[in-house]
Image 1 (cartoon, rainbow, N blue to C red):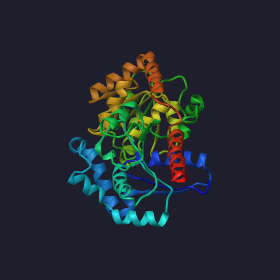
Image 2 (cartoon, one colour):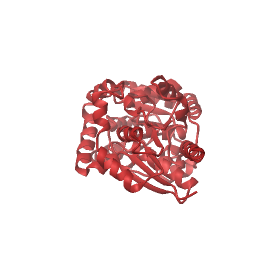
Image 3 (cartoon, helix red, strand yellow):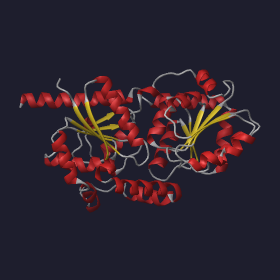
Image 4 (cartoon, rainbow, N blue to C red):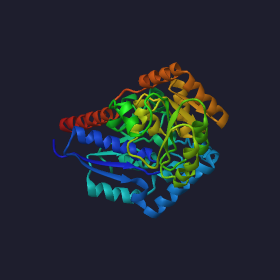
Length: 383
């Protein structure tokens, strides 16, 4: 095979779209070491200034006015492909994308962000983009922004998303259920005791991992720390504050004065180790965080899921038995200590998480892409 040339688009509105792209890149390089990959941020490609404004606005919106975001999400969830709004979105940066395609001449285009998938799907229908277009759906819910005539292959995380796409007219043969792609490092079994020792924590204590997302959008993190460090129940915790420096500093007094051990971090790159050390995770319900936790067989507690895709992801977790959702502080406290006091319930959630994931999601996704390429090449030979 000649050197494969792949163009990948993600977006930095939250870290999940980027992490999904990076997981696929790892799997691509593993299967085809000489592959040429161009990975671009959709927003930054169009305008770094525009991207920074949109990114900041999105983070502020979900952090301080989540209900407003939820209304927007649900009102746009069933927009038909031919609507005025969808046609407008599909025209964003059209000329820039056409020029890029002409310059790079990719063999394959992969999108982990829906808006860019819509733009490129239009070019696929017009024949301007004449190579396979793959969309990786990074949530456990169906939304119209993921669905575009012109996409050759959808990579999805679960059966319900598959069924939702089919119900909206997508051919079953164009959908592959692999699980949402996560880095292969989440597949490895790590030594829990060794990790806890490295974190200066105790192997015999139950461990709660609290993650607020890359931008610290988990509300009530300081309160969560307070109940965990002050409880008489023997427990230890790991706090990941992401890029929220204010939260990191706000925990100083609680950690110094608390009864129970705490390991605290800012932004980390060893999430797979921290998940391996934990007995449960309290977090937001981003699609990639959920997928990584499921891959590690880690029970999830979702606190105040943001209306929209995170709320849908939380519903999915509760449905499969691998997670619980708490809408307020009282509910969260009850869930945390009910699970800590009943390890068998945590074990049931671990099993449910294990049953929900296929394993090797990124590898399976790449296998589907290569099958699509092979089918296309065979068709061209016949013609």
